[in-house]
Length: 369
Image (tube, rainbow, N blue to C red; front, side, top):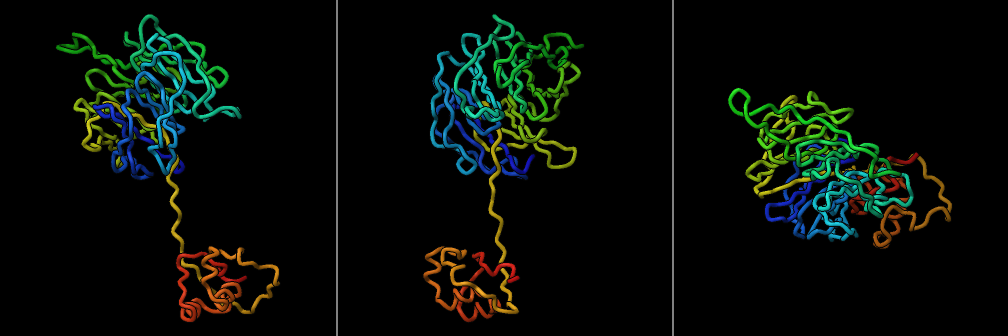
């Protein structure tokens, strides 16, 4: 995971209440607690630019006011559209929506990866395209870290949208991809093979979950064949969503609506760890800038000058001092002179003026040259 990014994890509870995961930081990718946000949400998706999108009452919204220091944002802001919505997936420079008319709509004018001066993170309009196997519908969508769109149809087929660019966000054609070779069920492999029920895009892999709750993944660079897929051992899931920052970290929900995160606590060992007691039905993972914590200030060193430097009268003003003005007003003239012309040792200044410099950066830091 880059030191400049971290995960942004949002989820919807069984009662349709949105939550975000607080306390996520480098080295603590699982976070610390779930924080409830206002609203009753049907669908939710976080982009790799940190924008949170949602469907509420057949309307599309984005969460305004979201920042690294205020991840829950301030309000749900509606976005204009003239079609009925069923599901949505957000990427870095795109937002794809599947409508109840069996059409796919992409948000144009989005600019996280765009050099266009008029592009914005919330876009400016819509462009449409048909589903890959009309009249069959779309049961799930996934967007990767590279903004590649994959769709899963209700006849259990997987397609990738080709030709998507900034000038043509809706793309030009569909390419069929292979699903994992699941094999048959029952005695001697007879019986119906399990089907893929959900897909999710990550940093390097496309992930899939079957109706037998097995988790699979395949690298999405190039053509996805049956041999591309590998089964992920461990906890069985009904829904997963991988990190866009780390190729191994993945969030998942099991068939008891319990949330887990797959981490790598030891070399070569990966575990699904339970995260909280809230019952969830879906989770989405995007990207947020790191919290930038100020470095702890070290105690400045005051050095005795070998000679007193000459200071012109017009070279120094009170506003040039590295203190707040109200602090300067509280200092005596002798103390200000000692700070400007450092002829005393640190101990002498502390004893004579009873002033603690541990929380201030002064002109004495590093000594006089």
